Length: 304
Image 1 (tube, rainbow, N blue to C red):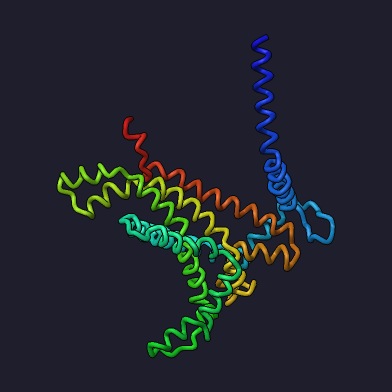
Image 2 (cartoon, helix red, strand yellow; image 1 turned 180 degrees about the horizontal axis):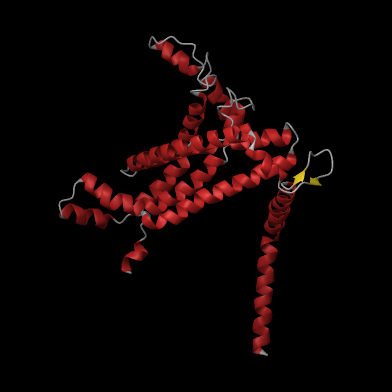
C-alpha cells in the first residue's frame, strides 16, 4: 500500500511539473519542432508558397552545386565568421582583463560596455552604422576635421564593405566580455600568490595561470560566437539594403537564404539551404568540441 501511495505521489508530482511547463512545451512544439519538421520536408520539394509543394528528391541540393551566388554567400560568411569571431573574443578578453583590476565605478563601466550587445543586432543600430560609413557619413566628417578630405564610401566599396560588418560585430563584445570577467573572477588568488612567491612575473602568471584557467569560458564563448557568426543577417540586410551589394561582398548566407525564400519565393530551395547551414554549424562546432580536449583545461581532470 505504501508502495502504491509513493508511486501515486510521484506521478502527481510529475504531472504537476509538466503542467507548469506546459505553456513553454506547447510553444516549443508549435513554434520550433513543427516548423523544423516542415522545413525538412520542404527541402525535398519544389515549393513556391503560392502552390502546393511537389516532391523532387535531392534536386534542391544538386542545384546548389551550380549556384554561384550560393558559393559566394558561403565565401563571405566563412570570411566574416573566421575574422569577426577571433577579433571579438580577443577584444572582449582584453577589456575583461582591464575590468578585473577593479575600480569604484566598475558596475557602471560594465553596463556601458554591455549596451552594444543588447542593441547591436537591432535595426536602429544597423541604420546608424550605415550612416556612419557612407560617403557623407560621420567617419569621413571626422577625418575631414583632421585634414583628411575624402568622399570614400566605406560601405559602397567591395573591398571595405564586409569590414564594416566585422567592425560592428567586434563592437558587440559586451556579452562575451561579461562572461570572460566572471571567469577571471573565479580564478583562485592563491595561484597568483604562489606564483609570486616562486618569482613568476606578470607575463608568466598570465601564460601559466590565467590562460589555462579561462579556457573553459573561452570554449563556451567560441561556440556561441561561432554560431552567431554563421547566422548573421540583420546587419548585412540593413547595411546592404537587402541586396548583399556592393558586388555581393556582403551577401552572407542567411541574407541569400532570405532572398531565395521571400524575394524569389523558392521556399523549397531556401529550406534546403537552411539545412545545409545547420550541417555547416554542426561540423564547425563538432570540430571545436573534438579539439577541446587538447586545449581546454578542467581542474577536475588534474586529479586523474
